[in-house]
Each structure stands twice: as structure tokens, then as C-alpha cells.
Length: 131
Image (cartoon, rainbow, N blue to C red; front, side, top):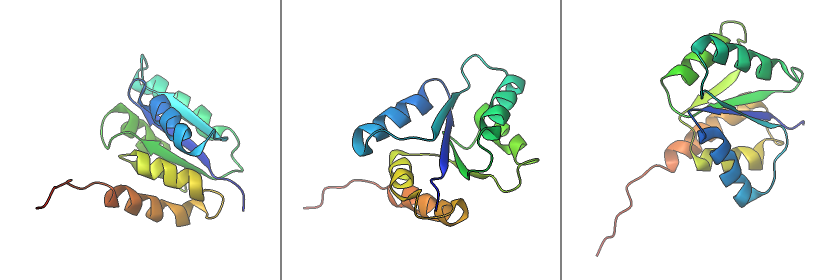
């Protein structure tokens, strides 16, 4: 099975910071691209994402969006009109990204997305000290 491409999109430096932080934990990663909306109109962001998605089209990709709303999510949603099989996860966190890097050569994108969503949800909880 081939390695799934990762595309991380977010506001400001979020995507780059997420990648660098994950790489500090799991090591340098290949086939990962980051996209920032900084200084881009929705139209320019749409075009930038289309270009990134269009690269290496033969390889599966999962797109990770920082939060489920705003220009990044709208641009990703617009991609789905033409890219029906594109896998997009909104609301990325570090556990999702690390799990992606650890498993992206073992599953297809369609198989991996539910695993990643569960990992993200399972790692959001209230930390409590009980006596």
C-alpha cells in the first residue's frame, strides 16, 4: 500500500506549526503539504488548494482543516464539488496528525478517516484530579 499524502490547511501559521510539532514527536515526514490562508481571499485560497490537491493526483490524500468554519473550511467544501472522493477532516488536533503519520502506509484514505476522527474525539476530555 502506498503512503497517503497529507495536506494541512489553517489560519495563519497553524498548519506549519502543527506539522513541525508532530515531526518533533514522530520524525520528519514526506508527502505533507501545508497551506495557510494568510493574506489570501477566498478565491485565491480556492485556487491554491486546487493546485495543491492537483499535484500527485494518483496518490490518495487526506486534507486536515484547523476548524469547522471560516475560509479554510469553505474552500475545502468547494473542492468537494469536483473532488467527490477527497477525504477532509475538520477540527484537527495533534493526536489525529500523529496517528495519521503512524498509519498512513497501512490503510486507504477511506479506511483511515474514521480511525483518525475517533482518535481526535477520544483525546478531548476534561483532566480531573480525584481524591
